Amino acid sequence: MIALYSAYACRERFIARGIAPSVSAKGNVYDNAVAEDLIGSLKNELVHH
Image 1 (tube, rainbow, N blue to C red):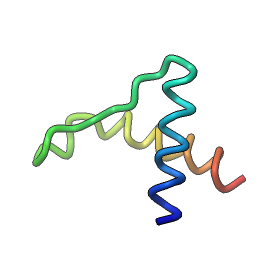
Image 2 (cartoon, rainbow, N blue to C red; image 1 turned 60 degrees about the vertical axis):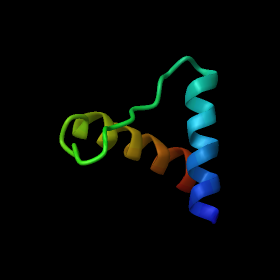
Image 3 (cartoon, rainbow, N blue to C red; image 1 turned 90 degrees about the vertical axis):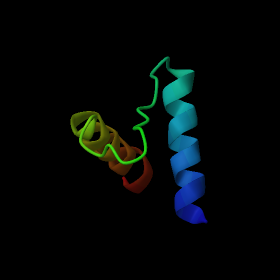
Image 4 (cartoon, helix red, strand yellow; image 1 turned 90 degrees about the horizontal axis):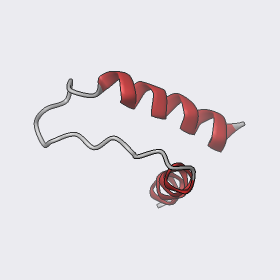
């Protein structure tokens, strides 16, 4: 539950700053791997530091 709330809060921060979150189609895991890596890094910095 905590992770879901953190992800939602992170998404809301992106949207508030005009950054569109990346959403992949089901079954297509490689189409946005670079964007997902960047978002993961940003989330790690925002949430865990």
